[in-house]
Length: 361
Image 1 (cartoon, rainbow, N blue to C red):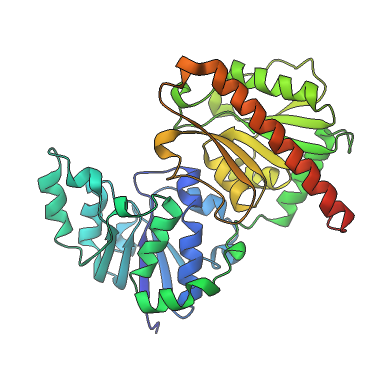
Image 2 (cartoon, rainbow, N blue to C red; image 1 turned 90 degrees about the horizontal axis):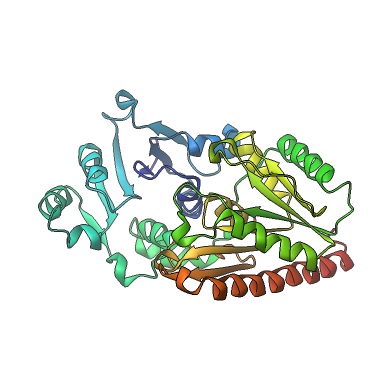
C-alpha cells in the first residue's frame, strides 16, 4: 500500500518531443521528494515510451504509464493528487474532471480566462479542480518552472524545505549504451575517424516552426557554409529525417556532412549525446541537447523565448531571439547569428581543450 498515489495528466494535446522533455525535471522532483509514493503518468502519445524504452530507466521517473485510450485501466482508479500539465485547453480539463482524485492541481490559464468563446466552459470545468497555483503570468513563464510549481502544490512546506537539495544534473534522459556506441561509431565514420577536432550538429527542421521564426534551408546552408570556411577544423553535420521530405545535395565543403536519422527517438538522442555542440531552431532536438548539457545555440521566436528557454541543467545555452517581423531586417539577423555562432564554436574549442588538459577526454 502506497502512502500517496499521484497521477500526472501529461501531454494530451501537445504531442512533441520537446513537450515531453520539459516534464523530466518534474518527474524527477516528485520521485525525489516522495520516494515511497506511486507515481502514475496518463498520456496519449507513445513519445514518452519511445524516449524511455527501457523499463528500468522509466522507473527512475514514474512507476506506471497509462494510456488515455485504454480507459478501462484508469477510469476507476482513485488518486490522492492529480497534476495537470496542459493548462491551456478545455478538452484537457474535461478529462481531468472525470478522474477521481482528492486534490487536483492546475495552473490558471490566462488565455482561457480572458477568451469570450471559451470562458463559460473554462469556469465550468474548473469547478471540479480543488487547487490552483499562482497564475502563469505572475511566474517566469518557463515550462520547466511551471511544471515544478505543480509539484510544489502537493506540499509547499516539503517542497520549499527540500528543493535546494535536489540535484537536477541527475534528471537526465537515459540512453541505452548499445545505441550510444552504435551512433558514436557512425559519427566517427562521418568524422573520418577523428580528422576534425569538433563535431557540431545542425538542426534546421521543426514541426511547429514556420519560416516566420526560422531561417530557410538555403539560409541555414549559407550560415553553415560560412562557418565551415572559418572553422576548417570543425565538422558540421546537418541532421535530417524522412518526414521533412527535403533532400540535401552533396556539399562542396568537405567539412559539411548530412545525417539522415531513420533510427527513431532512441537513436536520435544517442546521436545528439555524441556531438560536441548543437546549432538549430527551437525543437525537441534542442531540449534533448540541453538536457544532456551539450552546448547549444538556438533560433527562437521572441514570444516563446522565455517559455521554452534552456539552460536549466547548467550547460552552455544561448538563444538568437527573432521577432515576428524579423525578415524586415534579415541581413542583420543573419550576421548576428553568425557572430553568436563564432563565439559559440570558440567556447566549445576552449572548453574541450581545457577538459582535455584535465584528463576529461
